[in-house]
Length: 291
Image 1 (spheres, rainbow, N blue to C red):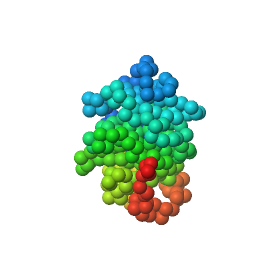
Image 2: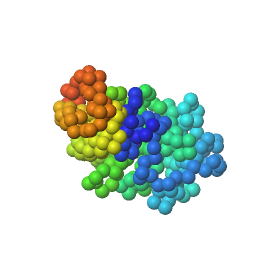
Image 3: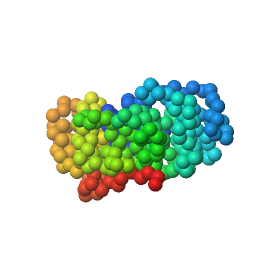
Image 4: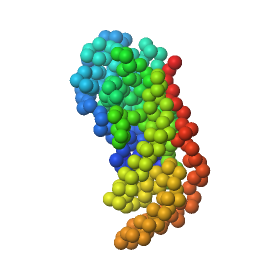
């Protein structure tokens, strides 16, 4: 499934956005540094047993290794990070407990990136099932620390007008049709991430523009749902209905007109009340981290 498709359990990312809708089908983020996950499991002397997998990632010319061990039923239950051959973070020693981690891909199990000048590692967890959960480890003042441990799926993305990447997250998978995930933008404030309603508003305005372009390129029920979901999250459902009507009147394609008419008949009239999305951008919680 490509990013932006809308199936049960989907998140509301457009075809031009980075994060995908499911835990196991995410595409690599374009800001990732190239990673090589070699099969050889080298010694990890700081641990009491050999890891089951090692990711090897280079961030800003600095090599990192992320090793994993598993004592549960998911892909891993603990991890350690080594920088230039020296262990600098161990989840067990830091008291970071979680039910299980989920490998992002078979080759590279986590997202590693340099964002806002900080080496950053994003781990996808099974803890929030059926909804998502994440752990984020970042280097602050020369030390790797956990900055997010929350039942939210998070990723870092570039946004127009922002110098670095912004953190985007949502706490519950959306449903198809027209029940999109409440996906917000978070900014670092002192020692934690807080939601920014201003940036979230801009993010969804950008998403709407991108999704309309995607619908124009490939007009079908899924891309139409993406457009209308963005209108819904912007609390502009009537604008979306007007856009559908105008588009149907202007297109020469009978198939597209039929798609819009069917979507209007089958879905628009029975969606979650628009009032459910009133002020949702201002009611997002800050992201939790260990104290």
